[in-house]
Image (tube, rainbow, N blue to C red; front, side):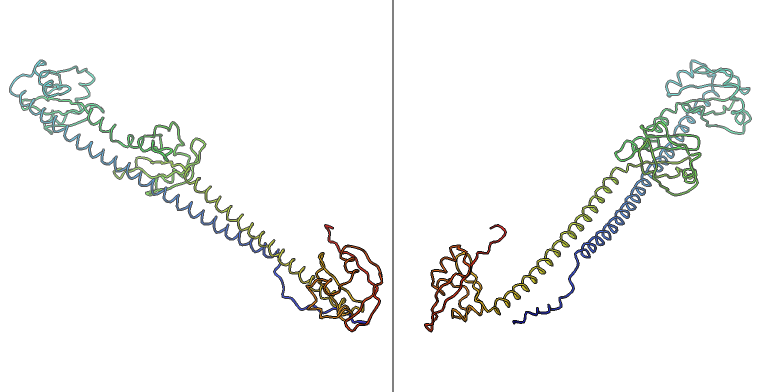
Length: 424
């Protein structure tokens, strides 16, 4: 009996498991995603710092503009004061030489563009005026003009209200001349160039949600879209910022929208007048964050897909390798069975080309099996029974005479059958 002991398969190297490969890609995706999110957080922090620096620049611009306006007001007041003082001295000199009547000073006031000229005696009684002076106003002057009446001062400059400046000059023969002039130019300067105007202009720019100047009592100035805003009192952050000498910032909510708010004490001349609050839109930051998160998501998905594809490819390759090994073992085992069989076995393809030709067939029909394989069976064994078998006839022990090369005649029992695949 032939020995059919199977061969011991060689030791194969350990194959990479697909699950491990998928897990490796998943870990890589998580690590890269974490690094990307950390990068987004750093970029957000950097953007907020840039916004804070921009808000500080805006606050410094407003503070500088207010300082310039205040200096200009001082210069304008000085000019107005000098002009009034010159006119008052001329009128005082004229009054020491002649009596000043209402008609005369009305004409002089019109010629010199003065709002009103008043002449008082040493007792503070009204002698002449180009306008109207009531008793309450006369009573109010008594205390303010005492230095002139007493000879302690020769001239005084004072502001009657926000629209009028006045200069009082003592006359040599006793009495006082008061000259008044309008402060409209100063008011126009404040309106055109003050912090309030600049705050409204800056507040109307894209990206600036609001800009307000606020003290502990309420709003001092605000951009046009601000009607109401949280007070300083009761807000720990704002109360703390009011006593600091630096910019502070936070994320705040204004009219239901989250904004980046920068707060800086407003001290144009070294004295803190309040807080300058600047709210900046976070729309651009949100767009950047959404774009960055989408990129991170796509990166993670790509790595996961690559991991799945890689794991699948490894699985397919390993399965193909296993199938190939199994096929090789089966082929080897089958070949050995066929080789060691006592019966002659011949297998062909559908057109009769020999594919299997075992040792018994070689001994019976003659010819080397390596040379015979690939040739047509009719050429190796030209017999009518071969034609019948190739035509699909099922044979079972059919007898036929065969004469070999030595001239010996033998009777063979031939069986044949067709082997079909799953498709028939």
